Image (tube, rainbow, N blue to C red; front, side, top):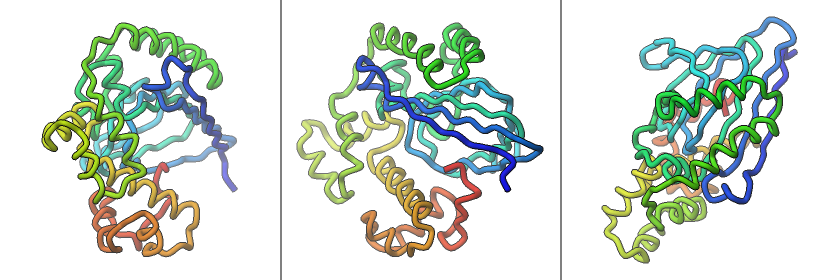
Amino acid sequence: MNTFNVSFQRHLPSVMLKDVVDEYTYREITFHDAGVIKKDMPCRHVNSIDFFIGKQYETTDIATQEVLPFVRSTIRGPRLQRKYTITIDQHFVCFSIRFKPTGIFRLFGIPMVNFVDDAINAEEVLPVDFRVINDKLSDARDLASCVAIVEPFLIELLRDADVSVSPYAAVLAAEINHLRLNKMTDFYAAIPQSTRQIERTFKNEVGVSPKTYFNLLRFENVLRAKVKVPNEKWSTIAYDLHYFDQMHLVRDFRKFLGIVPSVFDAASLAL
């Protein structure tokens, strides 16, 4: 029997922010008795700002086993590996701003390659602003209250933004989820830039190359499909998600999680 409850909520952004923010999420874990939740943080394609407004929790770097300092808010880019283990043993609340692929770049103008495989303390990026937001969020008790606090800040950032944004990167990112990889060259052919220029711009605004972004997104869909239907064969999932064969899926497992499909344990991951 679980000694904790987990709740998860979503909220869409206002019309003014719909081109930069995908959604807001609010995850809360409440313990009824002594207990510990320990999860590995898997790969992900999403760019986000995450605010941890509950009790502190522990983050361990899997490679070095170093326990990292707790921070109240982080800016995170795509994660290309299973990098951290989190240990939670008291009231946990995480409010997240999940951005459109180029959203953070549009607001801050910072190359997204700086956030890949990392969780940067937001107060190091905009010290005064994020200190104030962290302080206000400490009194928030639900998703609506959090959104009411951050949206004016985001709208002001967007109004003041003076960032040159490619008209192609956001469109390509939005379309990748509907493309097979062998059709990406067709998309490139319609853009009046070289493939190298397109990929350089995409990495600058999204964090990774279009191919890596596609592979991350597809692999996340693989994990979701397995969690949804645990008895489904890996070969069927691989076919449904346009892998050339099952060996390509095995390759992605090793690359993104450091394991093979046969030892996959959904319960060990923060999915």
